[in-house]
Image 1 (cartoon, helix red, strand yellow):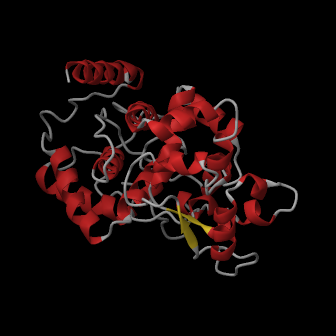
Image 2: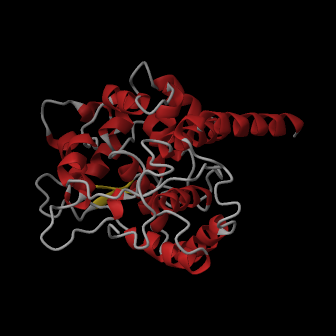
Length: 323
């Protein structure tokens, strides 16, 4: 027990040291809105009971926001009349859901702390709760982000969000740019343990005669995918498969499945075979605590990506519109 406490303290100090460069603080709202984290936590508890698919949606929402010009809540902005399509018009953002939950939380927070808390911070806190309330680690995240004051083009999202066909090298490079180690890069993809994958994202894996990926799959799993997502399925954007058998629980089952030849996406399967990542995948498949520690560190680094602070950006009163 003493050793576990020492390890926990070490990682907490490590996280706090690692975010100084992005000008965020662990006590940012201590005076202006000390109840903000509780409002998000208890607000989402009720929402998650109503719809257990919400945690996966919120975690993906954070990923897609932070990967396009940083964690600035730009993904929440709706198009105005006659304006250029926003990020959400990107084909890469197909399946993004539950943006309205951030607006609900914003209204709850505004009632207690008017014009104090950014939509960007609320989005990060919501993703943190998505992990914690489904059985994952409770991650301490620094706060103080501000919201973007401009509408980003969908073309930028198209250009920078990774496609479903991205391989190991692509993903490692993407996360290395955010300061992640190899283990953290493998861990952050463990977010796939929650949610689903649309059949449209695995059609190429299953039916491209030149990729040979079926040979690397566990035979019964390959048959299952073929039956669930038949070739030429007209509703491939509506049909889906679970990312792993415990799709509503944040655990290490993603790694167990991938190591057993049951990775759903191309990246899931390739990381289990690639010499750079296979050892880490194996470690996470048998040691959930290791996965949780590396994921927590990676989550903090991702949440610091491209943040606006101080006089940069704004605090939107309405998360879906530029002030």
